[in-house]
Image 1 (spheres, protein in one colour):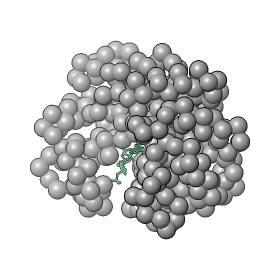
Image 2 (tube, protein in one colour; image 1 turned 90 degrees about the vertical axis):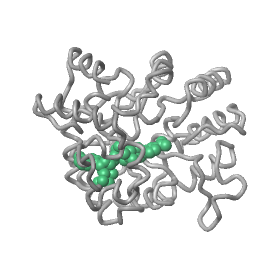
Image 3 (cartoon, protein in one colour; image 1 turned 60 degrees about the vertical axis):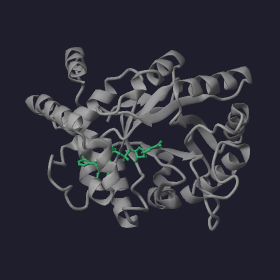
Amino acid sequence: MEYRRLGQTGLEISTIGLGTNNFGGRMDYDATKKVLNQTMEEGINFIDCANTYGGGKSEEFIGKALGKNRQEMIIATKAGAGLGPPGTPITGPNQRGATRHHIMQQAELSLKRLDTDYIDLFYMHRWDPDTPIEETMRALDDLVHSGKVRYLGCSNYTAWQMVEAIWAARANNLYNYCCIQNEYSLVSRDVEREVAPVSERYGVSVIPFFPLASGFLTGKYAQGEEPPEGTRFASSPNMGNRYLTEANWSLLGKLQSFSGERGHSVAELAFAWLLGSPVVPSVIAGATKPEQVTANAKAAEWQLSAEEMAEIREML
Ligand SMILES: NC(=O)c1ccc[n+]([C@@H]2O[C@H](COP(=O)([O-])OP(=O)(O)OC[C@H]3O[C@@H](n4cnc5c(N)ncnc54)[C@H](OP(=O)(O)O)[C@@H]3O)[C@@H](O)[C@H]2O)c1
């Protein structure tokens, strides 16, 4: 496994990370533990979670399954997308957003569920238009000073929101975001327009989510056929509808030929292409089975040449 630096920090994260939004929802504790064991086996040290995944169960399962191995892992989690303390409705006041109130409350709850006394990387899950950015950045800075959080990130921000947050932190001498987590894959490239250029200029890493377009880019779905049983598109048809377009089927065919000619799967190409970007240190992939973790870890071994990157750009 290769490790790269996260943003301008010295922290080394594995080029393949693990996404955990299936844990505690589609996956019970036993299935989660098997995937986490394989993750460690493959040398993957970067685990991406959020307070909302599985309604909090994902964090709980991770804490329980990692046990003493926690020290070797870099655990990311998020707050802001809508989750209150246990037993409260998520629609109540202060149950979401980037206020000092919500940030502090959710960090404490995540620490408890993860059964740890520090969070390696803490993301704001989304931009909060109702809270002054200085309030958000100062609350996050306090979490770092208290030792409960080590690094900061943002997610689902636009380019101007990133710049506003970065400058609010700079102007007040606060800890800053070292990465942004947005959707990015061979079939979702909005990031390239403005977020990636901001990332490059300010030294903020991009951590892509949905790198496999929820499984579409593994080639496991066939045009005109029902999604295979047990897959994400079988259980969430709306997720499928986002990706199963004529244009994407046509592109998938070309990408499959490109990767096949080089002895690789299209999923390997999806990871290798993202890792070919100068702003992407790691790709977090959700996995429901240990075999998927192994296959994804292997993808990082393929380094695309400049000519290959150019050929793919033509296709896209
Ligand atoms: N910040 C945000 O707002 C946000 C939003 C979404 C996700 N995320 C994060 O990003 C992570 C990654 O996204 P994701 O898991 O939703 O999507 P993804 O990585 O694009 O796709 C994951 C799905 O692909 C399939 N898969 C993975 N490896 C495979 C392999 N080797 N062979 C065949 N199928 C394979 C599995 O599908 P099956 O279920 O069909 O087995 C898995 O559930 C999440 O887990 C989460 O941590 C963040």
